[in-house]
Amino acid sequence: MDFSIAAAPQLPPMRRQPLTDLIRINVLIAERSGLSRRGADAAIAEGRVTSGGRSVVIGERLDPSVALELDGKVLVAAARTSLNGDEALGGVRLLAWYKPPGVTTTHSDPHAAVTLPQALVGQLGADADRILSIGRLDRESEGLLLLTPERRIVSRLAHPRAGLRRGYAVLTSVPLGATERARLLAGIRLTDGWARAVEARQLEPREAAEIRPRGPAQPHPACWSFIAIAEGRHHEVRRLYGAIERPVQRLVRIAYGPVRLGPLEVGAHRELTESERAELSALLIATPNQPGA
Image (cartoon, rainbow, N blue to C red):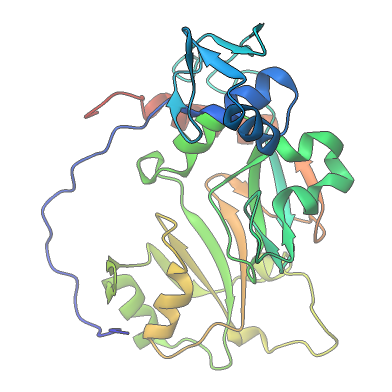
């Protein structure tokens, strides 16, 4: 892999891509019928789901207000909150969860030991199958993951345009020095383009307190560093650290925008506070869902 390091060039501004409100058909059916998404896909494959007199197709995306019928019966659309008003989040449920290592943040993966619904079913019961993660953490990473059943909020808050920084505590065998931090901040060319940290420094004591011990032997505090990035590309933090020859031994997300991991125990969840919801709501209002905006 090409991990050559150089100063980031001045690139032309990227064209902003519109955020879409179109929802996968199996999600809409699950919301309205009580079926799981797998059950919804099975119903579609059997030709039992129609819209406007035509049979729908697995994988297609539709406007959330579209009329749907299952076995000839109308499926009533779930009430959805506007995302451009003063109450952008409305009554939508939002959770902060400490994702344990070993959990794959997908709903279905034949190679996963534990999927997202499987990890949450003990706490959320039947609702676990409808919960979506805002962004992802790779299987061996751990820490803060925001959860919601509202797909449109997922797409809005996970998009780089929302401006939500992802903050991570990173454990390496050798501490980061000034040179390594400067490289992260300047930008590193990875195989899929340039990437850089918006913040790179030593982990502060209050942040270190959010890290749950793993095993009897505790690493030296100097081996923990903090990095914040503005987007969540595939294994971005691990690849950045690999490029500066500091392989990641442990990766813990401790912040996502205004939400912090705090004292959550591994595998536990909490509802977002009013102040956290207010800040996220303000961000949604500031990033309207308009093509070319």
